[in-house]
Length: 253
Ligand code: IYR
Image (cartoon, rainbow, N blue to C red; front, side, top):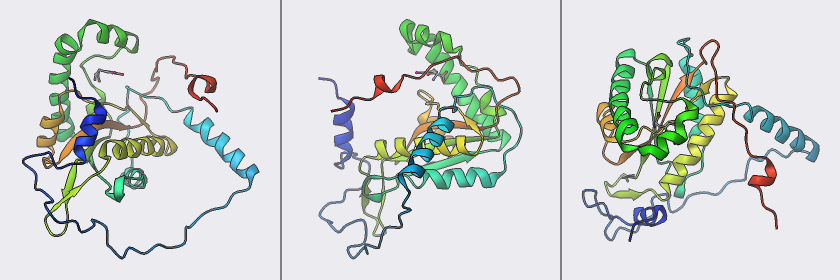
């Protein structure tokens, strides 16, 4: 039968990848055996303060929108660095931190990325996606022309490391790398929004290997997401979408 995502994820826990090194009989832990445990640095809030902050954070996050029309206005690199440091605070399986954030701001490199993606997306829209998918997307008014890839001051490409290497050269397994990178991407999106910038969560279909080669990333890394980051274009329009209310997304027992 067909493999489910869960089965593929389970396979990642074993070293099924034939071209990658095996951990063989090395069962020494990837983290130090004598890893210290220290007191938690915990900021205690009053219930009142917690309530206020949770409300304010929701109200802020509820203003986040996916934006497809970017201004060319530059963004200081330090802001991008802070945003990526924030993404790097995400939890990860066995603290493997299985992510690489490739930041592209060079106009030539953005143009190269754009050409790869537009070539593939044209085939996606015309052939691969099929009638139901393209019909579902019509209200969003997307197509294979991706101006944001050269207009936005930064492109952040999130690569997921499916494994890495220990100091002794043996393979280090990256448990739950899919979930870890997805969580980090959510934190990245929140950090982008909190910094007053906008983004588009994109998953360039079929472009992973070409973009990996273009950016010189190793074969243990797979492209997860590409996010243009910057300011919205003047008079930027977004689709008038509504979010599901709490009673449709939360079930209590
Ligand atoms: N990857 C294509 C198509 C696309 C797919 C979904 I699902 C969207 O929510 C939006 C677009 C593109 O970027 O145009």
